[in-house]
Amino acid sequence: MKRRDLLKGSVIAGAALAASAAIPALPTRLAAQPRAGSARDRVLFDLAKRELDRAGDAIWRKDIVGIADFGVHSANRRFYFVNLEREEVRPFHVSHGTGSDPEHDGWLNHYSNEEGSNATSRGAYVTWEWYQGRYGTSVRLGGLDSTNNNALRRYIVMHRAKYAEPSHIERWGRLGRSNGCFALGEEQFRIALLNLSGGRLLYADSLGLQDDGAMLTREQQLAALVPDEPTAAQRYNPGVF
Image (cartoon, rainbow, N blue to C red):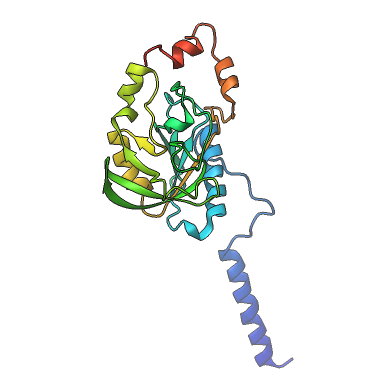
């Protein structure tokens, strides 16, 4: 072997050795890292990511997702702002439509995508621009599924309403009802304007999500009330209409 080739080989070997020393070898198996948030929050993180993947390019801002869980009573905070970048979840109140709750007992009974139904529609929405409407500043919504693709024609939007204030629950035991829109209280709507408008995803479904991450039907939720607590009628139907 020529001296020049020997020196060249030594330089290459030395560079490789230095590189291996500077960059530690990857472990054969990465240890699982704990996820932020509660069991409920982790379900919401996974659901938000699933729906973002399903919506694809229809959503152009993917940092925060709104998830409305109409499977729980309207007295509960059931509208979740899921911040995927910070792994944070903030819960708020939201109203459902009169056509979905003709008994006005605070439970959503059914969905509809029909014009004139005044009902809530299930599915994924894209939030569009702000505009000035009947309820002041509101956010237009575009339905992305066959179950809510009439949202624009039905004027289904996100807006503020007095009947969606937490004080309404203190008096009546439930929120008031919208015409199918996502209605929030004044302060909560202001937060929604900053966090959910302009091309983000809003998803609505009946999950019945609990703090421990379980998903329960209405019957299971009512059965879970312990005897020392108010009865279902007392808790959700105070008798004032």
